[in-house]
Length: 129
Ligand SMILES: [Zn+2]
Image 1 (cartoon, rainbow, N blue to C red):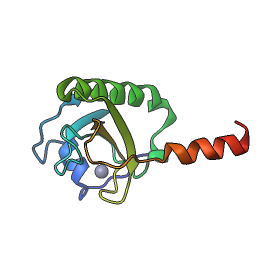
Image 2: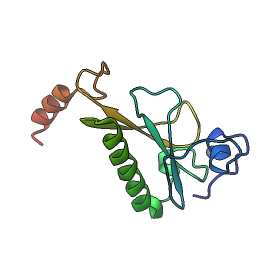
Image 3: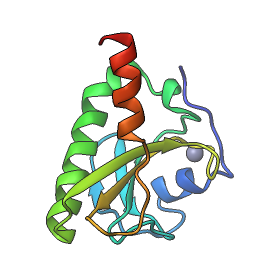
Image 4: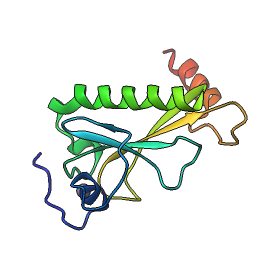
């Protein structure tokens, strides 16, 4: 899908340098910045430079590069925060330009797990997966 031309988009303006932001990672098609309202310290976002509205709008041909960007940003944040784990999250309600949240996690950080692992285990047992 061809990226939209969205001159009012916050992340497009950051990608073009029209709004100054410190990139913690950058390659040809993606960049990463810290979230201005972090869920935990070190919470960052991996963002395509082109305006893709949702995750499914990102061309499959960019998949390996996206995976590489997410891994590099995650490893950087784990190293910087001494995180024990991390969550990845894709949401589109806040800014209509797909971004992948990388949220470092530590025991006792006060954040509820994003998924209920007990519930998944129960469903898996019923489905005999
Ligand atoms: Zn955009």
